[in-house]
Length: 167
Image (cartoon, rainbow, N blue to C red; front, top):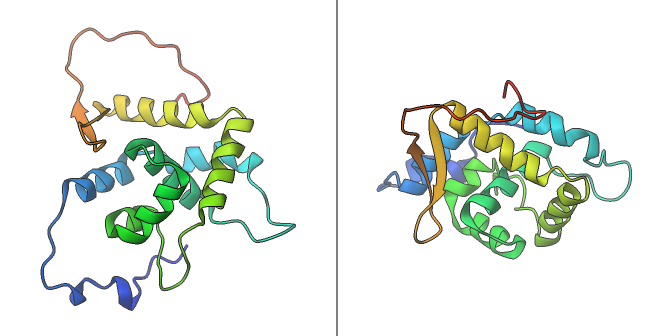
């Protein structure tokens, strides 16, 4: 995907800008989540676009799926907040100058595909393991704002690993 900023995204049009907790959280998740591994796991099940509308970028869809999980959003709410919130749109790599936000039905169909192939839980588990390997844990706040917290050091629990070993 082209990472050059469009005129609409250029920060020079904003005189006042503050880094919010949400944008800081999303920047940290950008760095911590194993994007390549997630894409490799989902790619065999994702439509190639031989029929119908061309599919959206797979990584973009995974990013939106994770936003839905972290912020407790259904497909309709995810579509709306992606239009409203710049930090979430940047995290999902959506440039409204070039493309619209995926429609509610597209987001719902992607979630159904993950459930049908029984990889929805694997994706969340892979992200959780990746975070824990880096010493942080994802927990929800009082208003559904996710938060990364340091894992206290101490005796390590032995966990059974899955296909995500080495994430």
